[in-house]
Image 1 (spheres, helix red, strand yellow):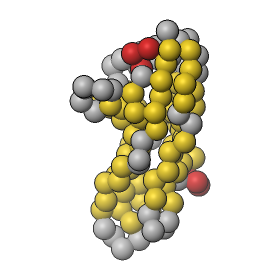
Image 2 (image 1 turned 90 degrees about the horizontal axis):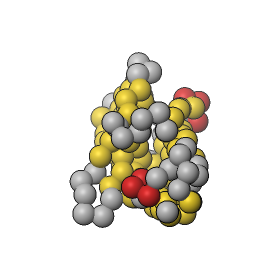
Image 3 (image 1 turned 60 degrees about the vertical axis):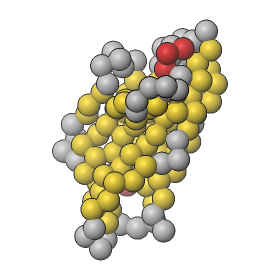
Amino acid sequence: QVQLVESGGGLVQAGGSLNLSCALSGGTFSIHAIGWYRQAPGKERELVAIILSGGSLNYGDFVKGRFTISRDNAKNTVYLQMNSLKPEDTAIYYCNADFTDWTRLRRDYWGQGTQVTVSS
């Protein structure tokens, strides 16, 4: 069973840090892209950071050097280190993976989401 499991969300004060992780498991995958999106109440889901298969990194404009995405290929895990958090970073953070599985089926998977709350 394919699973995309996130962890690391929580409550932090403004200026603090959190590290999110997301692990893809349950088979053999060729990952085309894996990363993080977020959705705040009343707003659309937006890109936070993503790693493409060639190693390219894309960040949302609001990140401005505060977040760093990284990947452990052996573990099919992606991490998001978030520093200098602001109250406006409060949202549900979702992991997304675009991959081809062992049956050669291309899939787009979303995690269940993890809440990040930044207090002022």
